[in-house]
Length: 198
Image 1 (cartoon, rainbow, N blue to C red):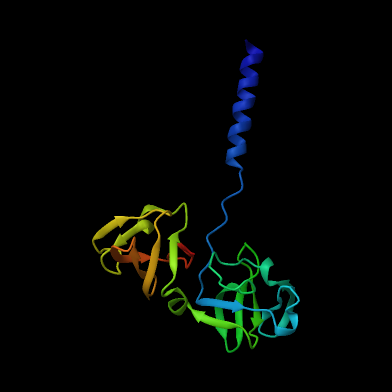
Image 2: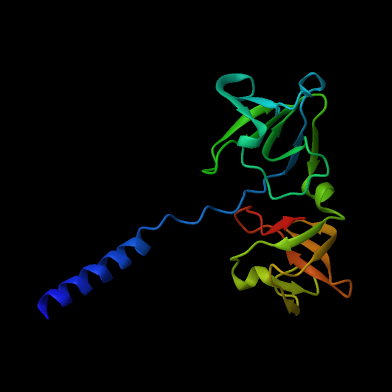
């Protein structure tokens, strides 16, 4: 009986330690100020993804060269197979600070002639979206006005299809199931995305 208890205790300890030391869930992507839509240069249309040279500061302190698909891309739809959407954290002239790994480290890239920058207000309007999974309840509430104190219309889940009608700051006016219209928070207080686009 003593050895059975020791084995059971060892098994329980192993299971508890395994869950206690499990890797934390990666954070939701940081939204920043907008989206940089990166396309390969016309000369690179041989199928190679665009290469981006990143710097510590605009044009100074080269960090290295990354291929666009290796950077953390947003869960955004792309209608074009060679289009890579990157979150822009900051902008200085034609230089854009973008995240280059999942830890949120960022570097500066110089905008190329065939790349586009869109603010979130421009990019989100008219898009289809869904809530990201695992959100706290306050982020899942559709409200009648663009404030956190406005009356609740519904509690949403990631299975609800939404169409973004307009954007006002951190709130988006959305159409739910072609029948209900209300306001939803699309990024949290830390500037991280609460929605993914389809």
